[in-house]
Each structure stands twice: as C-alpha cells, then as structure tokens.
Image (cartoon, rainbow, N blue to C red):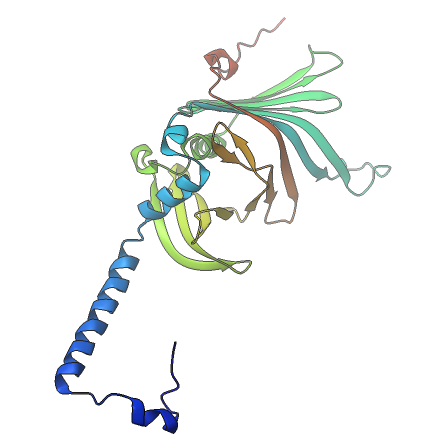
Length: 275
C-alpha cells in the first residue's frame, strides 16, 4: 500500500530517519535499480526468440520439423484485365492453394485457377514458375525467377521451417529494435534481416511471446488469426497480408501436415521438351 506522504495527519506516525537508515535505504534503492537494469539487459534478441519459440511449441517439436505442407484457400481481389470494360471493377478470388516448404531451401506453391494451374517453386538457388491450361495441358507458360524473387523465396522458406532460430548461421542477422505497442499490446520488435536486405520486422507480445504482426521491407503488413495445433505446434488459421498499396491477400489454412518427405523432383527446374 502507498501512503500520501503530503498528508499532515500521517506525519507524526512516520519513523524518524537516522543517517544509518538513509544509508541502508540508499543501498536498497541502488540494488533495486541494478536488478532492474540487469533484467532489461538480459532481454536480448536470443531471449525473445526463445520466448517466441516456447509459445509455438516445445524445442523438441520445433527442432524436429523438416517439412510443412499447408492446404487451404487463397482469398483476394483481382483487377480486371486492361481494356475489359465488361468486367467488374474488382473480382473476388477464392483459389485452392497448396504450399510445401522443406529444409533446407525447397518450396513450392500451387494455385488452382478456373482456367489454369499455377506453380511457383524454389530449389536451393534455382526458382521457376509455370502456368498450365486446365483445358489443354499442352498449353503452358514458363519462366525462371529473377535473383531477387529467389532471395525472397529463400527467406520465406527459412522463416517457415526454422521458427525464428539460428538465422546468423545462414549469414543473416537478428536485431533487437526496442519496444512498441500494437493495438494496445506491449510488444518487443525484432528485425530478421536476410540476404538481399529482405527484412521481416516482427512484433512479439512481451507477456507471452506471441507474434502480433510482421512488417516487411516493401511496406507490407502481415497478421495471423486463429490457432491450429498440429503435433504440439501452433499454426495460424489465417495469414493476412496487406500490401503497401492496400491490397489484401488472405491464406485460409484448412490443414497442416508435418514432416512428409518430398522428392527433389517436386522442386527442380523441369526439363522442357519442345515438339
């Protein structure tokens, strides 16, 4: 309980202080300040990474992940093609989506559109994308990804399967950038900096280590909603990406499967046969 020391009625009952008592109080105060400073100093990036990982699952469960297989739906809006006056201003899209990430740096994303199946893949330092017509599989478009796209996919793959840990071993860095409040939640801000200056600036709740939001170097904001427990690990039900332009892309996750083994051929640049 704290007493209002300016209240004259309380002054007679306060003890008379002696120089020795002042000395003891000063030492006690100095000890409290020292403890507080030491506690703050201990809050390193590693401290918060450990707390964030503990929120997601046990170290045994997280360290044992070799691949993640997401099944869900991509939800967004798409502007009409240039010159198509008959089309609405913006069309809502709900596309079946399948995403696989596998250690160390393999990933593929498959989107099923009404007229085509789109696949984008990463295999180490190689990346490619292909769109295949559903009506006529012989009709397809193919391209190799540019260097920056590959760096982004590598960073995204690492973030998915490593759960914030050991980025320094891959040549990146994690920087503790202080505190911030997100929607009234006190957070600690960490910047995960990958090759190519690709940065995921993450805000973790101080009390639990829960990831509250992520900001990227291109101005996008990523939020997660809901909870899906898989083999003792927390995954979100939704991942919401709002770009700097205001476009919103939502990945609604229906199911997650861990630690399947996918052959290298699923990610390798396909051999193109020209008839």
